Length: 228
Figure 1 (spheres, rainbow, N blue to C red):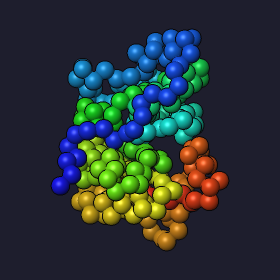
Figure 2: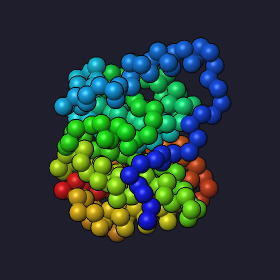
Figure 3: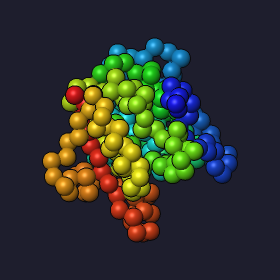
């Protein structure tokens, strides 16, 4: 039996070395933007933000940050916590957050399970997981983030009625995710018609991984589940 109770759910953490100037900006900004998990979590995650926000969403694995930054600009009253362990992608987003002076964004550059375990019960209004690594080889399936233990983690931190949104262009990972969410007692699929999971939620900003999938002839699937 696979042990999902611990371990990482990502691959490489470092790509090309950051230029000195960019690294300095990144390191200084990250100290301000990243929650300190050595401290107790605030009872209300809205207190993590320097700007006033009404709701808080998390994006697990934000990649290039296109969706995270677009949504933060579009919804200034929503706080976004972006999780991305890949340093190059994290640095790119942090520099943009600083440049655009986005007071409603925080980032975390490590494994999402650590942040989920740190946050208090029923504290998030939603979680995004968009085009995650599908780990297509059978021996790597244990690395897929969607598993019973992590669904329990998300269920704990999501408020009743909150949403978990998952998008992927890999049919096997879509099937994997749907099978595990449909049997989890804390979630219900919101789809009402056959096409609901074939079109993005609106409005939709997209990601570079989605664009690449469409260029290569693959279609995205968009699953939404409500926390009961």
